[in-house]
Length: 353
Image 1 (spheres, rainbow, N blue to C red):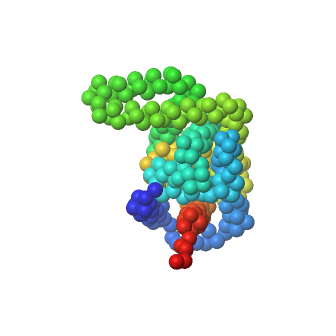
Image 2 (image 1 turned 45 degrees about the horizontal axis):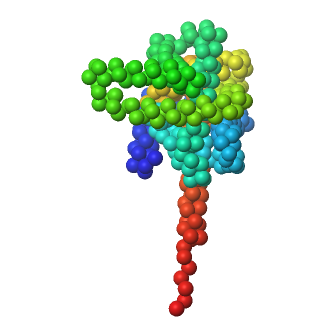
């Protein structure tokens, strides 16, 4: 990710944070808000940060498993660094588009080929999307109160996010396990676009489709050689998202509340995450906060919904954005130091005349 794009992404993120804060807090007296936040039990906040570390750590373990199947022996701490880099860059780029390329770049610095790095991110993305969709669909069917409390605006977001995620997930699974059919459908769509007068788009997309098909073919071959890999990745993705979705429940307990059980919070956060995941905004800032207040007001109550959102998003996004930014800087400096060391070791010593 170039410095200019990173600067633009950070600027957009800060602007969204400012606008979101204005609209959500304009009717909240700061003294009253500070008083409510002062009631939060710090031990639960620490537990929430621990859950986020588990969230990042699960992806790191997935990376270690996949790269290990491809013959690499990257230590877990290095895989953890890749995951922190992905969290940070995803958070400051629209639709999280920069995270995976940044991780592939870091892996390449450590000797992982770009093709294998891309394959790693592909398999992780497939498992993440399958798990998120399954989590949210189960919650939507099992929690009728959640559906009733969403309102029109949030309901439309859930419908949009669910439709986008379903199309992406079905498409990715088809490319992995039904490549012939998927290719025929994709080429048919591109041919249709050509007949509709979009020949330039068709010609542009065909090479990309071929490249993507090659990546999916490599992914399918990797899964075929390692039949236990896909279930293991799905299990880690489930643990990863469960950790993320548990953060609002920890915040609920931090305020001393105990009327609702953990599954209600897991399902509610899963639906909110699905609703905002496809929006082209860095970190889904704005809709994520507004969606939290809308969806969790029946659980926290109107008086605590906004303070709870501040604590929950503070743990799951803003605090970890800062932490992952520091780790990303450390990973970058480690790479620079290694490059400098390699240059010095390769330099030819001068001989005395």
